[in-house]
Length: 124
Image (tube, rainbow, N blue to C red; front, side, top):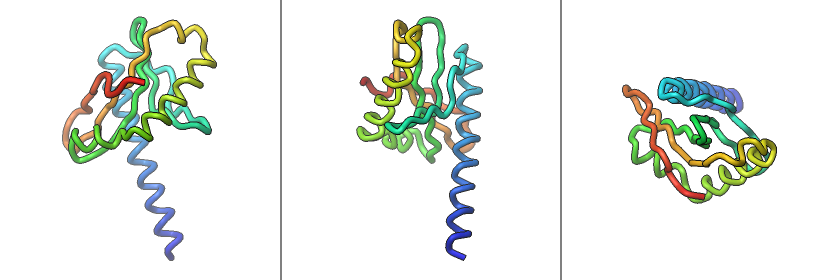
């Protein structure tokens, strides 16, 4: 019984995360970004979205939280290090992107609102 509840919770969290990332990608595409990768996973960390616009590559963390402040606080220094390590690995595998500008962004998925895009949430 406990295992079933745990599985249900994980599935619900996965669906919520997937919907949030889909909505974030849509919002970014409407702003002129091209999504070049989704859910890029490495042993070092994960990147929710990687988007490109012009000569800029945006490493995007997507957070679904009740408020913008909570979403911003959820990108902790530990999370930043993991995202940065994954970004370094992604760039090392794509030398043509390594010449472009790199920025770390946040897209906050807030209840009843269009996603909020916060540019340059932190510097690596």
